[in-house]
Image (cartoon, rainbow, N blue to C red; front, side, top):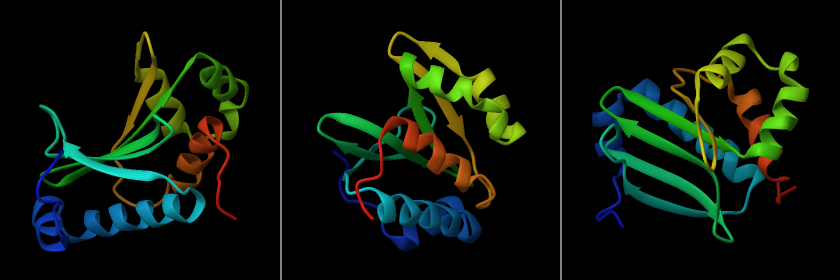
Length: 137
C-alpha cells in the first residue's frame, strides 16, 4: 500500500494541471457509474502511482501517473475480447489501434491508453461496460 496517498499538489506537480484535470474527470466518470473499492499503489517500473478500481477481488480498471503522463488500463479476458471484437468498428480508430497493439497475456489483453483529453472517455466507459455492468444509476 502506498503511504501517503498523493494529494492535489503532488499530482499536479507530477502530471501537470491539464492532465490532472483529465485524471479527475475520468475518475469522476467512473465513480458516477461504478461503486468500487479504490486502491492506491506504487506504479511499478514505468509509473509512479497506480490507482485501481476493484470489487470482489476483480479489477475493473486502473489509472496510472508519472511525470507529464497519465495512463488508463483495461484488461480484457477472452470472453471480453470476443465482445469487443464483435463490436470493434463502433469504437474510435485510436481505441482499435491500441487494442491491436496491446500485449496479450495468460489472463487477458492489457490495453493501455495515455489520454491527454476527454475525447476517448465515451469509449473507455463502453470498454468498462464489457467488463462489468455499471452498478450506479
